[in-house]
Length: 267
Image 1 (tube, rainbow, N blue to C red):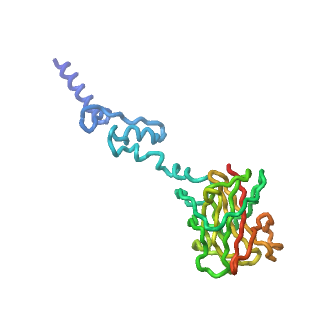
Image 2: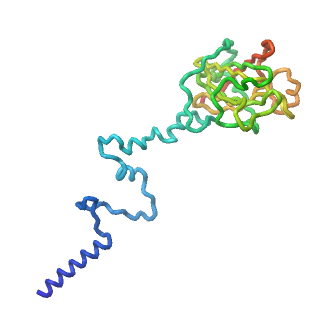
Image 3: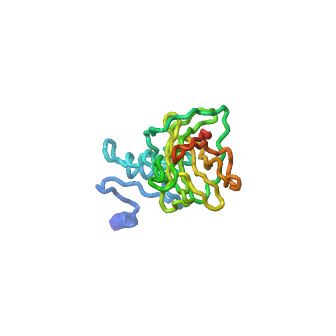
């Protein structure tokens, strides 16, 4: 009899000790045991396991966590909408509407396979995140310049929706390094044409007149280069000048028109 009572007391004590040490646990309703954590030796549980076991709402629930963490809304998915090397601000989506150009189209002079437009140094004054605009400078003093042209592949075929990002000095040879005056990016239209309204840049020590530009076909590599003006005396002493990057410039009253066709790689 005493032995039986002793065994019962021992069993009760064992149960009490196990419960106190957390060896048994129950869910919020106190009905069934929940899974206990397993020591993985310092390994971090995978996000997939966390979402699948703890965060996903029951089937049919409108506010399921699975919908919230859909990969279509992740920063990686947003950036994938941009071409590699794109200089637009992260997360910015390219416009769906192609521009309407006012200048008359010029004939394309191109022999396939065409030579890629030469690259040039970026220089110290580039700023990312320029606004999308095709008219630069506003009412700044200086002669106005309308630059038109095409973006072409080496097969001489026009590239629609190619990106061009321009930046330059004003008529006195000064860059706006705190804002975006005389800075902007634009896109070619459905026929591969672009049009930029700006001012003729001025000279500053060591450089001839030039316009900086980055050009990129959708999904293609980024070309960084510069455009130059013909018959400028400083062309002969500028160590960066390249005659292959000369625009064709014509006077238009007190202002000027210019043309240049870029040839870029598509992948």
